[in-house]
Image 1: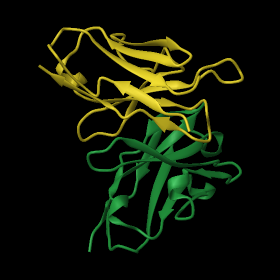
Image 2: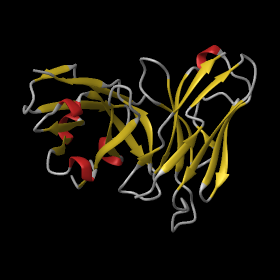
Image 3: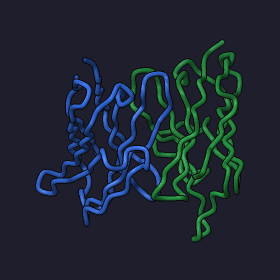
Image 4: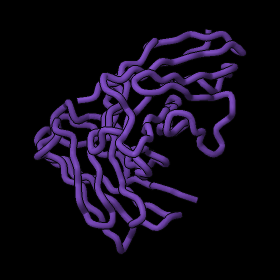
Length: 117
Length: 113
């Protein structure tokens, strides 16, 4: 079955960077893109960005443009999200999702990123 | 940017009673291919989001038929015919029509009365 397994929770200092991984299985990795979504405490879901697993083409929300980079490793069917210049406003649970036909069919279990001094 | 407005933002429902959530878009969600890319997600406490409905009214595999989606253009609705304890959580609508900018509604918190 389709699975997306994310890396463990992270605690980072303000100004630092974080890189979260999302290992996929159960389907051909390059068949579907991967989107990333976050949920800050007490807030709703916010789309972060999308990557084509075939071409590496990326799209990002304007709010994070310049601070976020999505990449993939086809050899391990893994997607990555790196976020730089962390602030307390980036504290959130980050999810990867299998992007199918302009929707999110399956989700990872989530990675809590806490930004704290 | 497309804005999705959900109502109500919070709903308290008696077990066995129906529930309905509205999602209104600031722009039409009909894509150039004629399809409407409006999805609904459920997020139970402490869990990842789970998709319930895609393209307005298509139920995902394993989703009970008590969940139904409908609507067109800019107005959409998620209905739960009989609320059970396991339905507690936050429900979100999301549009993919205006990709590459995906947008979620603010979320509707469903509680048991």
